[in-house]
Length: 152
Image 1 (cartoon, rainbow, N blue to C red):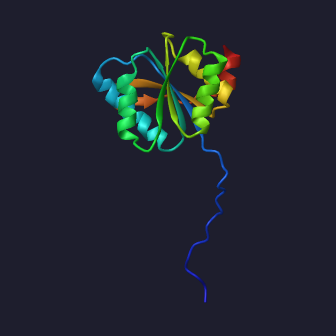
Image 2: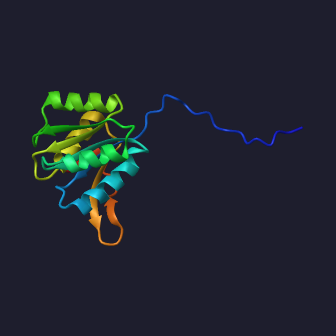
Image 3: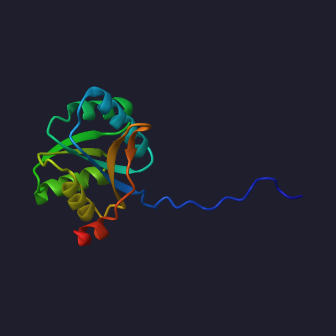
């Protein structure tokens, strides 16, 4: 008698989840912050995530992530335009411990900081979140950190 239970592929418990770094331009308005939080929550439930946000007023973003991701440890870290090695090590430790770091940078453009962290962490993707008039907030196609850095 044959079993009707489908065969399953073995799952490795040691596979590393995808790691993404998300670069956010400076937030403007609470409606946009709500859309950003919704997009980030979707990503954070599926992969390791580090958020890099331009501007140092990131409390609404951090509070929104904490509200919608109660089982995640959301930690804000303030860095300059070129993160110090100690800051990079701290952020890497947070990611390795399962936290969701929100890196608030004084840089006007968060992309260089996100790429710097992606290289340091060997991240799989760097995403840029941008507004869309029809769909709200969209993650742009991922950059490959190594390819992007060499192309600059």
